[in-house]
Length: 438
Image (cartoon, rainbow, N blue to C red; front, side):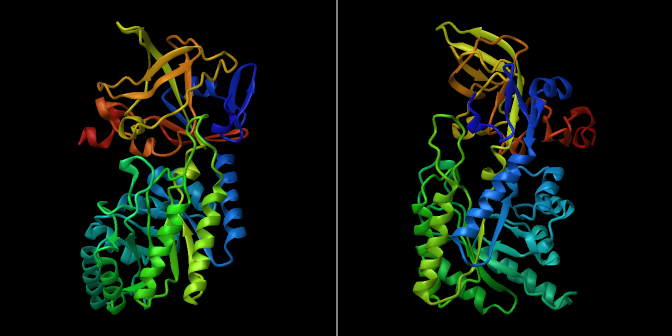
C-alpha cells in the first residue's frame, strides 16, 4: 500500500483499507459510489506543519489563507473557518459561503480576473481584508464604485477599501500550460514589463477612494521549484522600490506541489516556505523597510491528500488490439483533471490491498467522451464488475469542478473522524434540483 499518498489515518487490516477507523468498503455500500471521503486529521496535521514551518522561517506577521476554489462545500468551509484560516474567494458564491461558514471579513480576500459589480459591491459593503485588483481597468472600475459608495455615505468611517495589486512578473514555471498564471501572455494580473504595474501603484496611491496596502503574485499550480517564487518576489520589491512604495502585506500566492503518484518525487514543504521567507527578509533588508505581513495561499496542498475518491467497477473488456479497459461509475463529471490537464493518479483496490497489481489497464469513466480517462496505462490487481477502487489525493479540484455532464449526479462527500461520520454534501438528486424544476 502506498501510505504516503493516503490520509494520515489510513490503516490496513486483513487487506482492507480504513480511514480514521472507517472501512472504505462499508462506507461505499452505505453511501453509494462515486463517493468522496475527507480525513479531518490530515487537514489538521498538514495545516499545523505549514504553520510551524512558517513560524520558524519568518519573524514577521503571517497569515495562511485557503484557496476556496480547491473545494468549498459549506460544511467543509466551516471546518476550515474553525481552524482559524483565512480564505481566498473568487466569486459571489464563494464569498457568501465564506460568510455563512464563519469567516470574518478581516479573513477574506477577493480574487478574480473579471469581478462583477455585484462582487465588488459586496466586498465594499463587507469591508474585506483585501480586494485583489487584477487590472488597470478593474482598478478604475473599483475606484468608481468606492467613490459612489462614499458619496452616498458609508456606515463605517473606514470606508476606503483595502486593496492589493496582483502583479504579473512575466515568469513561466514548469507545469502544465493551463496551470501557468505568471507569464507574459496570461489573462491574470497587471504586468510589470510594459509599465502597467508601476502605473497601477501610482494610480492607487493617488486615489482618495482606495487604500493600497499590498502586492500579490501567483505563478501557477503544481510548482515544485522554489526558485521562481524567489525571482518573483525580487521583481515585486524592485517594482516597489522604483515607486517608493512599502508593502504592508505581501503574498507570493500558493500553488506548491502535491504528490499524486508514488513514483513522483517527494519535495518537502519547507523548500517553499523557507525560500519565500528568506527572499522577503532579504529584500526588506536591502530596502531598509519593515517586514510585511506574509500571506501564503494553499488550496490544493491543504485539501488534496485529505480526500480519497471511491468508485465501483462496471464494464471490463478488451479492445481489438488487446488493450484492457476498466470502467467505473464516475469519471470526468466528478474529476475533470485528467481530461483537462493530463493529471496522473494512483488507483488501489481498498478491499484487497495485499493483492499484487499484475494487470495493465486503462481506467476510464462512464461518460460519452473518448478523453474520459481517470488513469491511462496503469497496473491493478485483476478486477471485475462490483469491485471497489480508490484514488488517493482526490481532495482538491475534483468536486469543485464537478458537473452534471450526461446529467450525472454529483457525488456525496464525507468528513471522517475516529468514531464519527459527517456528510459534507449529500449525493445529488437531479430530479429534485431547483434548476431542473424551474
